[in-house]
Image (cartoon, rainbow, N blue to C red; front, side, top):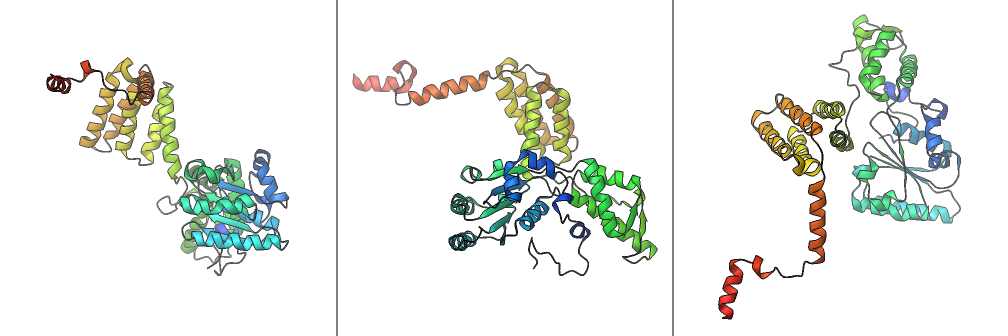
Amino acid sequence: MTGLFDSESDLSVPPLAQRARPQRLSEFFGLERLLKQHASLNVALYDNRAFHIVLYGPPGVGKTTLARLIARQREEDVVEFSATTASTKDIKELHLKAKTMVRQGYRPPLCFVDEIHRFTKVQQDALLAPLEEGTISFIGASTENPYVSLTPALLSRLRCIELTPLKDDELYKLIKRASDFEHVNLSDTFVDKVIKLCGGDARAAIGAVEEAASARRKREDLTADEPAQLDESDIDTEIVVLGGGRSKSSHYELTSALIKSMRASDLESSLYYLARLLIENEDPRFIARRLAVFASEDIGPINNQALAVANATYSLIEKVGMPEGRYHLTHCVMYLSSSPKSTQVKQYLKEALDRATRTRSEPVPNHLRGSITEIEDRYRQ
C-alpha cells in the first residue's frame, strides 16, 4: 500500500487529482496568505526547528498536499499514521525512536496524522510527551474544527491553521491546469459550471474534469492521449460527485449561526441558516429542539407565547413529518426572530443556583415544610 508521502503510485495511470497535485510550493494556491497569517507555517517550511501544527478545513482544500510540500521542503524522515488504524503503542514506539535519533544528533522526524479528530483522548494524550519534548515535528490534518475535536492539553501544544475553500479565480487556474494533464480543452461554460457546483473543493473540481473526459472519450472512441473538447453538456451531475460535503463541526456552526441570527432579530439571516440546515438534511427534530431552547433562554417571560409556538412546532414535526414540516420550522423561526428578547430566565436561574450552592446545608424553614413539620410537631408534644 502506498503511503501519503510516496512519490510513485503502483497504478499505471494515477487519478487526475494525483497527477495534477502541486509539486512545488509556488503551485499551491493561497500559500502567501497562509504564511502571512501563521508564523508557525514559516517555521515548518523554512526553519530547522521542530514544529507542531494542525491543518484543518473541508475536503479538497489542500491539507494533504500542503503536508507533502512541507515534508519535501524539510527533507526529514516521515512517519505517517492514520487515526483510524494507529494505536497508542505506535505513538509510544515513535516517541522512543525519535528520542534516540535526537540524542544521536539527527533532526526530529516528521509525524503526520491524518483525520486526527478521530484520535481518542488516550491517543491524544500519548502525543503530549513527544510534542512537549520537541522530539518530533508534527502535522495533523482534520476536516473537523480542532478547537472542538481535540483535547485542551493537546491544543495547547499545537498551532491550528485553517485552510478555506478555494476562491473562484484559484479554482479556474486549477481546473485549467488539470485539463493540461488530462489532454482536454474546456469551454468557459464548462469551467463556470464546475466552479459553481464544486463549492471550493479542488478534488471535486478535478474529479469533474476527469469524469467528463472519460465519458467523452468513450462516446467518441478516443484514446487517453487524444485531445477532447468538453463543454457544459458533458457534466452529468447525477454521476459526478461534486463538492459540498459537510463536516460534523459545520453541524454546530450552522446551528450557532441560526441561533445568533435570531438573537440579533436578523430575519433574513435566520431564514438563510435554517435553509442551510434543511438542505444539509439536518434532523428537523434537532432544529425544533434548538428552537424550544431558544424560546426559553433568549425570549422567556417577555413573551411566553414563544415557548408555546416552539412546543407546537416540535409536536407538528412529529405528526406531519417532512418535507411539509419545513413550513412549521420557518413559521417558528420567523416568530422567534421577530419576538422581543430577554435573558431573564438564564439570569434568574443562575442567581438561584449560586445561592443554592452557597446555602445547600441550610434546613428548609418550618413554615415551608408542610405536613412533615406537622407530624414532627405532634411527636414532639
